[in-house]
Length: 405
Figure 1 (cartoon, rainbow, N blue to C red):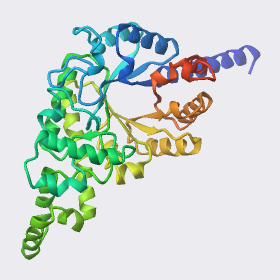
Figure 2: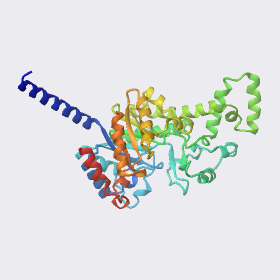
Figure 3: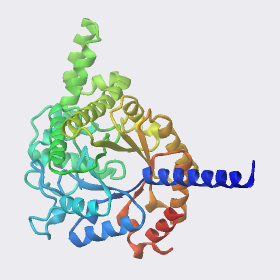
């Protein structure tokens, strides 16, 4: 091969590699979860857009539904109390979409799905719990009490709140029960309303799960589960169980624990099916993603998130495993499992940047790339942009330099 031909070949190879790298960079999702406290006014949103675009990010997952409230104009839910100091006509999501478009940032509406209220205080008028306390997810310890009488709103909330406060690290607040078809219908209406009003690039579902195995014992759930089991029982056994149920509302869940877990798992999946149908009917091209527990076994057994099946059944376009562990090896394993069960869908590696150093965060981005994840998400913008809380230097500047390499 003559020198000129060799030189041309080397140049062609260099351009091919460079083009491939550019293509990967442009397709890689470089995202941030943006908690609702970072959306409280035009100035805050202006800074958010400037910070993220200048730092090399291309995707924002913005929390517009935090606890059964709205940081957008909603037909179904009350305006968030966090916006009380803002003018009534200020719409955080509309304003953000306008600003983000100018900087080529993709915006996904992040919704806390089943988690709807904190354990303290009364929700405002119009809140889903104020209107439908019977949709609240009931703890096991209150199953018999709340089943046997028509509880008032204050009574239901007060009693469930007491249970939640005993173990706040296990239960973040009040959840809606996905076993209630009316609760599922309501959540679908909330999603349809949002997508009909705002040209977001995606819908991102969070808290699409149970808080822990001690919840989900509401009347509707218990009756539905009983009806399922009764179909499989011999008449004599069914009669005996019916008699036992009068005295012990938990006799079915205690007698058939494996089926009870499966039942709750199917309720979450059923809700996701409803939301997918709603979202795709409203906006066929919408990207539907979900933040899921990073440990697949914990997700399946304790949170009733069967996210492997969700991906296999094409219920999601993208999976966001919250691999928030500080340990690089555990992070790699959790993201690799998600990648292995993606079934052609996207996987965005969720990195708990607030739990670790900026060096460890950048290391995890590198790991996600090696596993061939489709992108990464950092939790969260508010913490990364708070220079006072980061003694090792401005994290966004470090990230920018890293992404530009």
